[in-house]
Amino acid sequence: MSPIEHLVTSGTFSLDGGTWEVDNNVWFIGDEREVLVIDPAHDADAVAERIGDRRLTAIVCTHAHDDHVNQAPVLSDRFDAPILLDPAEAPLWKLAHPDRQPDRELSDGQVIAVAGIELRVLSTPGHSPGSACLHVPELKTIFTGDTLFQGGPGATGRSYSSFDTIISSISRDLLALPGETTVHTGHGGSTTIGDEAPHLEEWRARGY
Image 1 (spheres, helix red, strand yellow):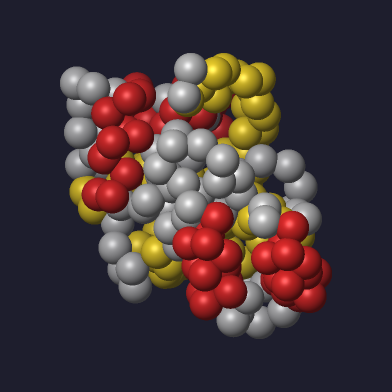
Image 2 (tube, one colour):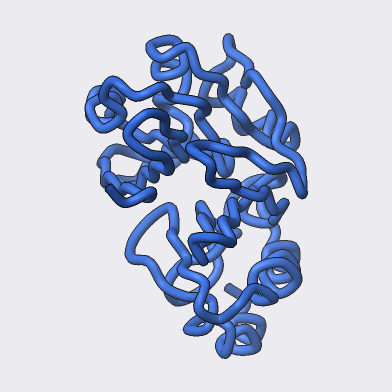
C-alpha cells in the first residue's frame, strides 16, 4: 500500500463575488491503520470512503479558500479528527465557516506525524495570508496546495493575495528543496521542483 493516496473531487470555488467550477486534489498520507487528509474538498462521502475504517489523525488545510475547506468540519465531526490551519487564514475561513473554528494552528517548522511519517510545515504566504505546504523528506515529496503548480505559482489576483509574497515564498522555501522532490498540488497534475525551478525569473517577468 502506497503511503500517499489521491482523490479528485469536483465543485465550486467562490470569492470576491465570483464562482468557478473546479476540480480539487485531495491527498491522503498514512497506512492501513491511520491516515491524515490534506484539503478535503467538495465530497465528504467520497473522502470518507477513502478513509474507510482507518483512524483519521488530522485534517490539514493548506489554506482556507472554500474549495479546500468546505468539507473539513463534516469530516472532523464524523471521524473526531482535528482541523489544522494557519491562523493568518482566519478571514478566509470565516467566509466558509462563520460558526466553526479550526481546532489547532499550523506554524512554520511544525512537524506532524502519521503512520511513522513526518510532514514538516512550511509557511508559504502569497496565494493567501497563511498558505502552507507540507514537506515529507523521506518520501521526497511536498504538498503545495495552491502555492506552486505545474507551470507556475498559484493565483494572486484576488483578495488577501500577493504576487510578490508568493514569489518570495516559492524562491525561499520551495525551490531550495532537492530537484527530485515531487510536487503534489491542489489542482491539476503533479510536477517536480527541478522542473519548475528554471522558470522563476520568467514568472517574475510575467507577473504571475
